[in-house]
Length: 319
Image (cartoon, rainbow, N blue to C red; front, side, top):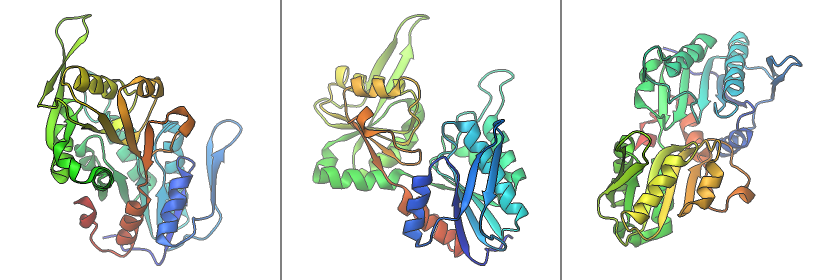
């Protein structure tokens, strides 16, 4: 068993330094002094400017865009800490990239999520702390402890305060069949009923037909998912809920705001009233979209880090 270090130290890569600073503020410590950058040929370097010998080190780095650069930064920082004799190294990855490549979807596909797990372990990480993995089985890809925090309680608290008693008259909508289990757990906590958007392509080269399973007519709905990438599925589901199901207002929330390609344009043009994200990935400029709102995960990660350091249960955070 790996024992905790003599003291707690938190460092950050370049992926989400604001979140790292906010986490340190909640813990009541200063962010560790380090520098991570690139040489002129593009190779990544990491310089640690304070001793970490025997310390319990937490490296905060989301593997968001640019995914490969941020992943390489994390691996090199882990290696630097291990060679500097850190007591224990925890990779804190609020958004775990490559999580969608968790199985072979067709012949000769890689399982990149497993490869990333192997790389983190080989680099010297002793444990991983992350949030809302796209596929739960990724926990089993690691041979080291993995704690997966849930963004669900943050959204539950936000919407309970926003809508109050009106919650029981609203509906939670899963944008596809694959997100039903996640959406059901969210709906139960808010005492809402659940609806599902079912999409299917009847014939090749024909548009998808959207069906809404559940009665959403005249109701305010909350679309719930784990991430939004190009926003195609989310915006199509929002349109189906209104045009096919007859819903009134559509709100949406997701843990990870990947927002690649035409995502912002699609969200701005959609009938979504408000889209709430967690700040596991750095927030976009508010000027780009007035529909997007960010909720912070810093208090939850700060509590998880303190509990890991103190060697007490973190299961309270999974409820």
